[in-house]
Length: 347
Ligand code: CP3
Image (cartoon, rainbow, N blue to C red; front, side, top):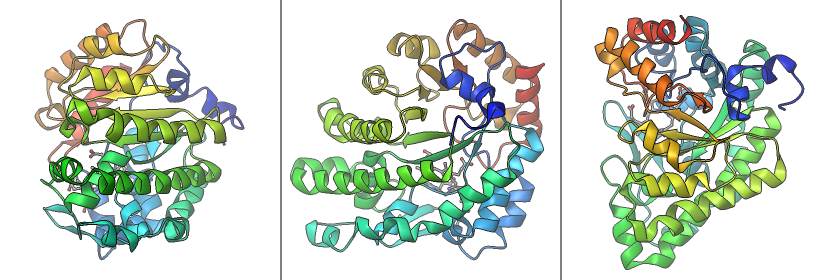
């Protein structure tokens, strides 16, 4: 765990998470292992399905290491997906090439009763093997980020069944609030167990992806987003007080960013649509901000990257900052753009 290795403690990423303002910000990218890399596309062919890739430690380790080898990012993120949790609970999950994830949607409490949190850790054993392998093979100074989806986001997929269905959970919570609450609770409980185990296996930080925060109306923010996150963060803080937690409420609503920042988390990741200057007003002085650069910059390239990096750093002067995008890097991004980004940050 964090604390054993002084090289890790002096990494830019963990120093920023500890509230330090570093002269050069650490850089990593959400989805840094992915289809924009030719070596990822090669390895991807060795697995029959996307979930097989997630559950084959040798391959998951390899694709996690690829962007570290190529770019030397300041943090690595274990290769997996947020939807391994519903899969582990016993829900049918599959990925359709070019369309994204599909789940057999939960219609009611009868469907929910078929799932079980007790099977989660055994099912996710390959992920834990991946973490152990990464701790052996990552450079000693590169922290490893573990993660899971935040409960509202995971429940969005469990109830909606896949891409483009994010309003279904909202509709159902007006019609059947008890059912939706139980799904969110199930995701929360599974996530707590999963994350504690990730900590046992040696991750150096945890990121919680609330990718569908933007779909939640103000009246449901506390029940759907904040209360479940509070449960997770409180459980993890009791279990491993020093473990840094990053939360990514993907929304332009600054009240949601503020409410998330009131939890004992070390960093808040900011989506592209909310300005860093506004985000800075919503978080504590010691809480790092992460992200916000437009993923499109990694597609278009050029000196727009330098301008965006300079602007982000100017806004974040005097505040801990982790340079990242406002969402995942896309398959059409270019390697030259990522190289330019790193050059722009590191000189
Ligand atoms: O490098 C990393 O960031 C680690 C791996 C990672 C993946 N998914 C791999 C992946 C992480 C951290 C995730 C998180 C994830 N997965 C989120 C939260 C972050 C976000 O993007 O908002 C969500 C909502 C998912 C669910 C998911 N998985 C979707 C919507 C999709 C399809 C979209 C797409 O890009 O195709 C996936 C598939 C997926 N997960 C891919 C990768 C590399 C692409 C599939 C492939 O390579 O065959």
